[in-house]
Amino acid sequence: MNKGQEAFTLYSVASYARRTVEERRRQLIDLGLDLFGTRPYDEISIEEIAQEAGMSKGLLYHYFPSKRDFYVACVHQAALELRRATRPDPRLDPPAQLRAGLSVYLDHVQANLARCRAFVSGGIGADPEVTAITEETRRINSENILGGLGVTEEEPLLRMVVRGWISFVEITAIKWAEAGGADKEELVQILLAALAAVVRRARAMPAKVR
Image (cartoon, rainbow, N blue to C red; front, side, top):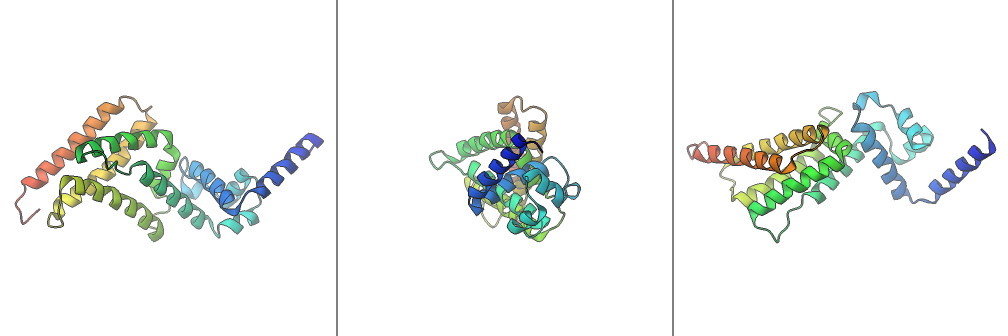
């Protein structure tokens, strides 16, 4: 290492040391979201994460006890960002809220593709903590839509198909963003039409089925 590299390293370490614990954790989570959003969980080692973060593996363990804990924290952050981005605007009526929410969601996915991939993929299988985070986010989104549609607890089939539509939107949005994110308004129309179709079909079923 030459003197210039040594000086830069010392400056980076000093700058990192001045950050609060929460700032350091957030920086690591930002890195993790980028990594887990582009490669499978099992392909990323704790050593690689530490190297990308410019710290020792021991220091990384100071912030996150294991790679799983690190991944869970990343999924939790992705979920919080998604919830904030898709929070309904109370100034709009329900149809306008849904349309605006879809538009904002697509923008969010396009701008944060790696983060959204990490959220949707659930890279460590049926981990109960990861599942709880992702399902709570989907439940919140589902309840927002169901409330706007006037769906009651006595319509279980309709509640189920709306939940399925949300999963469809997640996967479609990822594929759309990966393909370049063209024709957003047309995609919004398609997604709304799909929701209208499943709601209409579910409500046409006999009451005992609904």
